[in-house]
Image 1 (cartoon, rainbow, N blue to C red):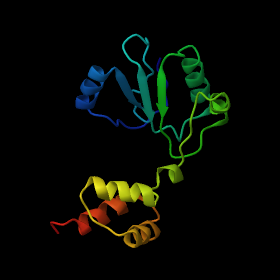
Image 2: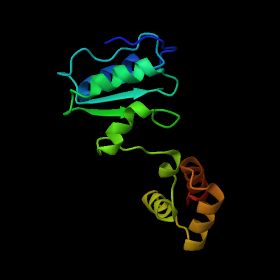
Image 3: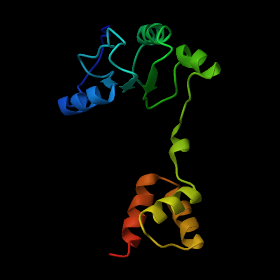
Length: 151
């Protein structure tokens, strides 16, 4: 099913080949050739990225596409809140929305990351890293690398 209005290609052919082996499909809504898979036989998970600038007709089409495919998983990525058309999925428990704050590290996450990478840190240091980084994962990774024993 083709949906027009897309802008630029996002994914490589290598990614598409790897996805075929995992029974997942990844599509970029901003790609000029964006289309929903015609059949649902060859995939179990569909990831669609760059949904933030789509119009109401797109959302209605996407919802109509999702409804009859109850056994499939859909991962919808956007840089904004979900549109009203998708709220029914959220209210019925079929959709989980993760905002940016849900992806931030707390002290427990930072401790786990440091431990997994063999970086020693006191609880005071972990708390300071969390406060200074605001929990942004990239900042935590950089701190861990700077504090690594081989540095």
